[in-house]
Image 1: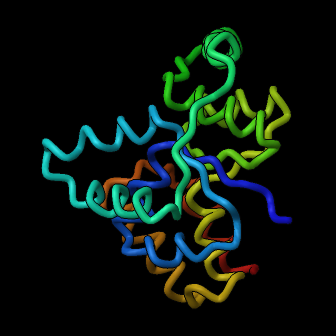
Image 2 (image 1 turned 90 degrees about the vertical axis):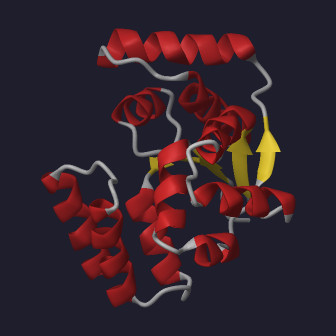
Image 3 (image 1 turned 30 degrees about the horizontal axis):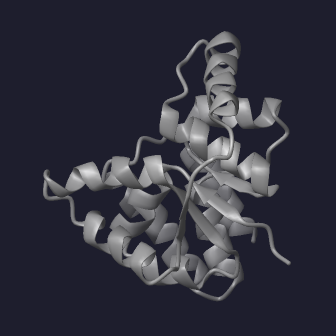
Length: 176
């Protein structure tokens, strides 16, 4: 069985803005979305964000399972660990996604550095949007050239990605 994927906000937004919702839907993994992440994404509805309708549809058709962490104390603990270790806050939605990934022995899908740092400390496998692009290519959902083009498009659409991270993901996609 493939590992379950638990999503944070940013990868959802940019995969959908990159017109890759269909490819995301078809990935073999079971996909989970913390309710707090879903609520955070739905805030964009009032702002006219186009990805909101797609996210709602993915949840309504059960391509994503809405869930909550079993332990609120674990969520608080994760938020504390991030501040102490990374000196950056881990927002509640990110902490809940990490807690769920830990509970499910799944993969956290997050781009946030504090979330990734804390996942490493908690021994939770964590990957980001670039990993999803690679998986879409590996599973035959998008050609390599399209995955590379989408990487650039998502960055132009506002995905905050350092030049080093961009080059790392670009090399990763080229090597697959």
